[in-house]
Length: 192
Image (cartoon, rainbow, N blue to C red):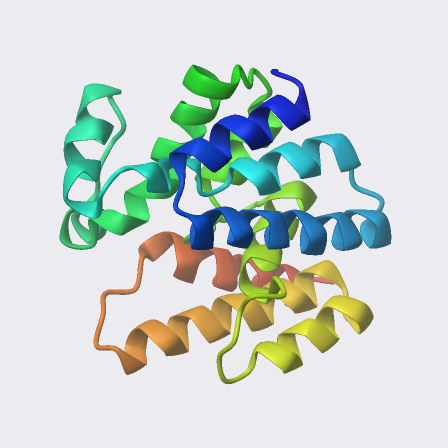
């Protein structure tokens, strides 16, 4: 991997100011969660910083960029190509920032829709993206409170549920991975 400060400088030149500030906010929130849950802070910093690195591409170019890299596109992503910024971001992290760590790549790839059996790092990046200091939406303060008091799975359950309700309120398609991630956490909790 390139040195962290070099990654920051490259990213700053590739993203608009708002998206770059959002990325720094995700680093802040993710590091707080990594410390709380004992997750590798170096991997967390890189995954959080680079989670939106593919947002350098306009949404209407994401399908072509994903095809160029052999990234599988499902029907929901075809309908909502912005979702591709997550798996495309994992590819860009390797191409531009020399990330060669599967845990970091997977955290970037799953940060938008989630997936079943997410690692603690993946869960932290997913949730930090929802609660970073620049976020302002109904329910964000409740999620921020959970970041201080709940277990990682309780946080994820609330975050995934919030995401599903938001997409439903907009009349959008729910990605199957989001439903599977939520169902897996619920079924694992009931199996204890």
